[in-house]
Length: 139
Image (tube, rainbow, N blue to C red):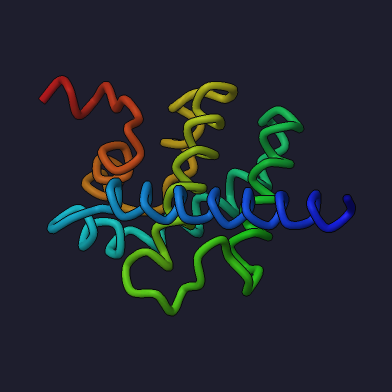
């Protein structure tokens, strides 16, 4: 009976990993979006560090950002980084979910206040993560 449970858990983990892999293939950035994501990567990492250090943000937000930075620094990922495109897609998806949570709790203004890059870079960040940038909509 013990082996049945172990095999069942192993099959469930393998099936979940395959589903995640297929989902990442479907939603991965294509064409100019991938180039745009790579262009703003240094600014994005500085943004995450600045947000995590901001004492005015709620504690839960800072903890999530700290955990995200630790996840990004940790060498083992859901999908290994040596797999072309998909290796970094899981990181991008995790960053997107965390940033959306930060905006829900702290507001887009907090993200804008700490953004170290250009206005075009911030617009690209909003487009890539699906965040609403009111200044970009007015133009």
